[in-house]
Length: 110
Image (cartoon, rainbow, N blue to C red; front, side):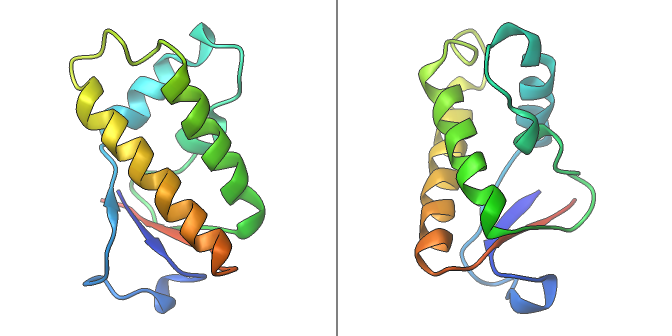
């Protein structure tokens, strides 16, 4: 799935900057949910095969979830940990930018 800044699917331009998030990362986060003491559902509940609008109210929760994942040890043993760390940091940056613009984020499914 790919994340774009916008309030609806119609708002986004598929040629604009986007963050590609691997399905494997979402699956890994879901499978690791019992290994941490914080809620990661805001990420793993995003349907990777559908288009989803994430409103401003949930963006801060996604930022907090990404930051919590990064400071935890759950990615430590993952084969793709470096790439996934980059994806999470890029999503944090995009989400912070969306908040500053008072807009949402759109996830375009595969």
